[in-house]
Image (cartoon, rainbow, N blue to C red; front, side):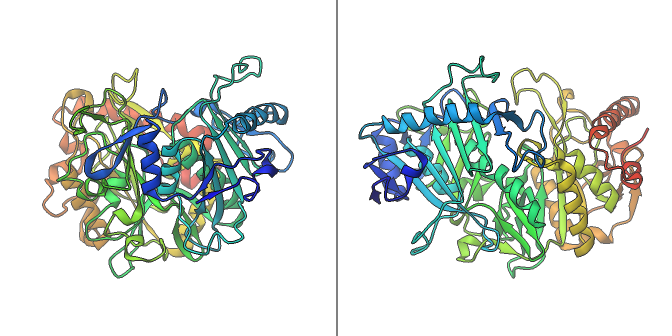
Length: 538
C-alpha cells in the first residue's frame, strides 16, 4: 500500500516529506521490484534469488550499543556489545536520515509487524528499507499482521536500514570499519549502514528481545521447537550454526513451532518469528524435503550459485559463501503449527536437546545430562568448526558460544542461565546432548560425519521416551550417561571409547577437548560448585 511518510510518523524520525512510501507490500509486488530494480532473479519454483553484496554473513565487529544511562548498567559490555557514544550515534543517524531525505522519488519500503507470537510479550517492529529484497526478507521473517492489526499501529522498535550508506570517518570515531549496526535502546531505534545482509535485521530484533524479555522473567532462546501433532510433548533444540537445528526440528511427523528464536514464559514456549531462515549449502531434497519444498514462490534465496541461463541452482557450490540461505514464511512448512492456522505457541517443553557438531569425535552421539551438567553445557555452548566452513579454518576448531547464542546476548550470560535453571526445575524437563558431528575419529581423519538418518533415529528415541528404557554407562571424561544400546544404531558407535580404533589418539584428543572446555568455562563460572564439578575432568 502506497502512503506518505508523514502519515506513518516518519517525520518524527527526521525523515520528512517522503511520498513514495510502500507499506507491507504483497510478496508479488516486492518480487516484481526485485526483478525490475535488478536486485535479483526468479529461480526454483518461483523463489526470488539475490546476492547480498560484499557481506554474506553478519558483521559482529561492527555492532554497537549506545552507552546511555537507562541501559548501561544492564548491558553485557565487551566484544559482543561494544560501546558507542550518543554523539557518534547522532552523527551517523543524521547521515542515515539525510540519505532517505535525498532519495528523490525512489521507493521506500516499510514493514510493520510483530516479533513474538504470544501477544503478552509481542513487540511491534517497524523496518524501513530502500531495497525491495530486504523488505521481502523481513516480510518472511517477522510475524505478518492480520487484517485490521495495523490500525493505530505504534512501532515499539524501529530499524532504519541504509545499507548503501558507509561511514568514511570510522577510524576517527574509533570504529572497526565503514560498516555500522547501532542500537539505541532508550530511543528504541537501530540504524544499519554499509552492509546489505538481511540477517542483521533479524538478529538485531533478536538482540533487542534478549534485552527486554529476561527483565520480564521470560527466557529468550536461540533454539528451534516442535510438538506432537496433538500439540503435546513440546521439545526445544539448542544449537549453533551447522549443528542441524533447523533440519532436525523440521520433522514430517512433528509440527514445527519455529526454527531459530523463541521465548519461554511461565505460560509456555512461543516463537519470535513468522518464518524460517535455513542454510541451503549441500541441501538434499531427499534428506531435507521440508526445507527443499519450502523453496517456492514467496521464498527468498541468498547467495546461491545458479546457471545464468537455466537458473538451476547448484546447492553444493559454496564459491560465493558456505552461508547460502533461504528465508520463507512458516506456512511454507506444511507441517507447522502456523501452517495449520494456529499461533506459534505451545506449552512447556518436555525435552530439551543440546545439539553440537563435535569435529574432534570425542562426544557420543547422544547422552543424558543431569541438571548440573545441563547448566554447564548451556553456559559452554560448544560446537566445532571444520575445515572449509570459514576462511582460515584448516582443522577442527572448538567454538564456545554462551547459551548457544553468544553473539546475540545483550545481558550477561548468567542471567539467561539462571532463567533456564529456574524453568528446568519448575517444569521438570529432561535434557539430552546430541552430537551430529563425528564419532570414532576426528574430522581431519577423513572419516564421515554421523549420518543424518542415525541422528533422526536418536531424536525420535528421545522424544518418544524410548531412550529411557536403555541401560546407561558413564562417559569417562564428561561424566554424562550414554545408552549402551539404542534401536538399530551400532552399539559400538554409542560410546566413543569403543568407536575409536586408536585408543591412544582418542585419549589424547579427549584430554585436549576437556582442557578447552575448562579454559572456556572459567570466564562464565556461576560460582556454583555443583555445576562446576559437573563439567568434564581429566
